[in-house]
Amino acid sequence: MTVFYKKLNELPKEMSGFIHMAGALADEMGINAYVVGGFVRDIFLGVKNFDVDLVVEGDGIAFASECARELDLKLVSHKRFGTATLHGLRGFKVDIASARREIYEKPAALPVVFKGHIKDDLFRRDFTVNAMAISINKHRFGQLVDFYDGHSDLKTGVIRALHANSFIDDPTRILRAVRFEQRFDFKIDKATLSWIKSAVRRKMLHKVQKHRLRDELILMFKESLPLKSLRRLWGLAGFSYIAPSLRFQKEWQRFFEEAAKKAGWFEEHFSHKRHLEPYVMYMSLFFYPLAHKELSQAMRDFAFHKGESSRILSFRENFTRVEKELSKKNVRGSVVYRIFEPLSYEVALLSAALSKSVLVLKRAQDFLFVYNGQRIHVKGEDLKRLGVKPGPHFKNILDELLYAKIDGEVKDKEEELALAQKLIQK
Ligand code: ATP
Image 1: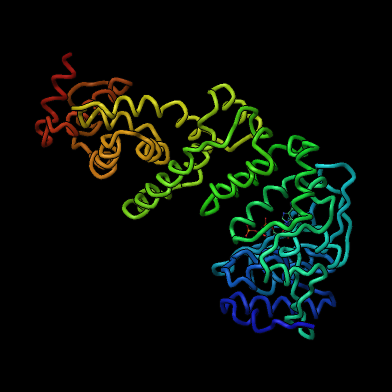
Image 2 (image 1 turned 90 degrees about the horizontal axis):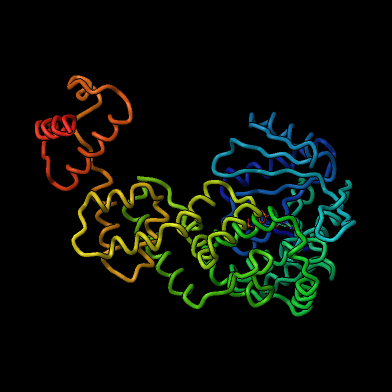
């Protein structure tokens, strides 16, 4: 029996302390408890993981409630799934579940779930490297539970599904196989590859619920090098289950690199402005080749969150115009401002990244460094004093004053007020 208590003790102090406490509590309740899944995989890979997954052979919610009581934590439980999440631990989160057995009655549909043992719980998982557990009860603390040789696959860098039906049961695992393979520079095992191909031939990816596919796609775009996964996915399964006309584009290599560079540049200079979401930039690139109608359809079918779909659509709708307007010579600062201001930072940066003209990049920089922070002195109160009634006109005047300031036509409050008066008389 291989024992890895050292690995658990080497985790950040609070995390390791929590795991010991949870093990002692499981002893008191007379149940077996384990850390499982990606958390265990990452312990062996030496990768930081702040999502601790616990499984107990017993009532997961009751166990989670005891943990919450003991440590005075916030508990969110999901009765339907028998799972719970503990919040309030410093720097990490804990998900707790009851060990379960799953039966897939219909391909690509959600399984029927029964209470089970740890072996069942590990068998329902996607790949051997994600199907290991480590005991945390005191007398077995650190014992590896590895029925499917995940530890050996981890050492040799293999992504192996647990059985031939895995991708028929849950086709989203195809995307997961690709994502883990590319993230860790592993190789999908030969038999697993043939099971994937067979599920693809049976068009299983067309049958799975679209929102589940969407969630896996988003995770793929959140990887640090998403294009690697997209290329591999294209080779294995194409993209027709996402949109019929979508193809892998040769230019993506350059586009994704440029987008990553611009995102890095933004983080370096403007991380205080807003947290940038590079994955939305990559998704915008991915969907750009689609005609507007097909793109809108895909956004609806997959029920992308508003924040994502609005930026993806915005890039599709605005890039050509932004590029055309901003690659002209002699464009006033206020025009640059008016073009970029309504766009998200992701769309603005991506436009700059993709444009053939360096002028667009230069203007995006001017916008971010200078224009975006410009403020005028005149306030609504000042306009009221000049006799303007609140209404749409109000905003128009304030906007005009800001444009004038950006273009260097007014320098101080006095000049702004003089211009405001002229605008009022118009
Ligand atoms: P990441 O490092 O990307 O967060 P993870 O392995 O922690 O990866 P999660 O999606 O958080 O992935 O899932 C946790 C665990 O649940 C996985 O390690 C795996 O054991 C199991 N799992 C998740 N999704 C599936 C699935 N579709 N089919 C089977 N098992 C799954």
